[in-house]
Image (cartoon, rainbow, N blue to C red):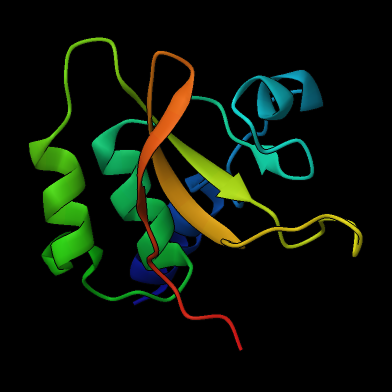
Length: 115
């Protein structure tokens, strides 16, 4: 029993608590200057983070399936976080994963609902 608890705690400690974010220059380059943008993520990192954020089955979401089906060589998946955008900034989407192609956001996966 004690050994199981040790492994459970060690497993939790090895999971990164947040996604690493890029400098603000990357957000400006992608056309979301009031937001924060993550480093490029793998598909499995996106799924893991979406689950960490409370979505129990993000891989079954139609928006995710469509995004993954359209990925091309050289595309990137990144988290876009506009929750702290200044009130003067007009931000339509607050928190989502974006498919980036040629420095443009071409699709989004909204994996959580924010009230």
